[in-house]
Length: 121
View: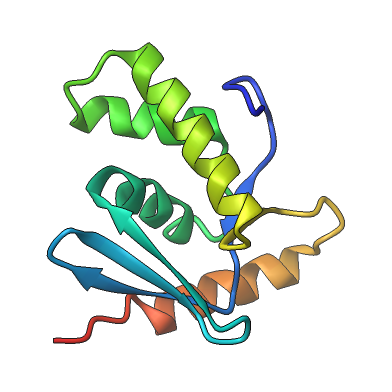
């Protein structure tokens, strides 16, 4: 089980796209022909990872959520760790490998900026 002191940087997988829904987000992975429906909290966690293409730690996610959510920190920590681990098991997010070069990070950031969030209406 993951814990809040884990220093791993988490990123979304490049092939995953998101669609806003009334309940949260729908993640789509066309390469693996799979999807994941995320409620509001889970969608917020995934978007924080999406918006930080260089990677974000679980602690940083919790710190950001704590400023917006009137939820006790220990609950945010537990639920965020559980959620990131689940998304990783399902292949929607991954740890950023330490061997990735800075140019790859810049490419990820440029892709995120040009890609944006896909919304179907």
